[in-house]
Image (tube, rainbow, N blue to C red):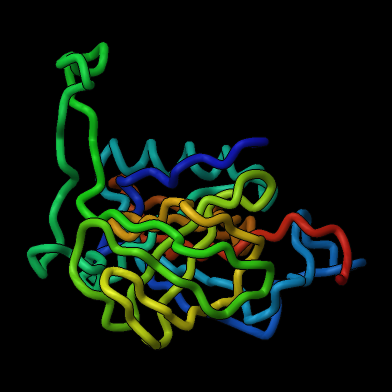
Length: 242
């Protein structure tokens, strides 16, 4: 799988989504590690580990989603966009204070998608106020729509290939000037980010890969039911130990 795919909702909707935590000082692997596609991460600050515990694969939709995801993972080589949805992402700066779905609107000319469905727009809107470099641990965020930042909010940034979507969290709030918040983030930035870049709070994504090929080898019982636990680790495109 050359381009990451969004992990199927049938697998991620279980028990409020994946549990995310920063693990280790660096990403796994490195030269001679034998782990395809992984290497020590130059930005430091640990790597994201996501666990979806005891996924209930009990109907045809989930069985199909699980088996297809296992095939597309190509062992550990396939990449996934894993959504951050811990406790339905309740700590995001939702305007109403509680999680809400996307704003559904037609195109600017009043037309929907070709299948008749409207376009989806995030409820929370924010951008990077000032450019920041690799390994930066402070970021200025300008809120356009949403509540004030208080800390522990998860968000993702699109860094472009090869890093793509990367997950960060607000560790502390510093100075504030109107809608601009000077925050401390973890982990450090995986790649530089330009001023004006969009920040995703509604449904943050992280580019990850399967922690092991064996997790897709789950056996189904006689009724076609299984409860696998899925673990993903943040993927690094770096090919060396730098």
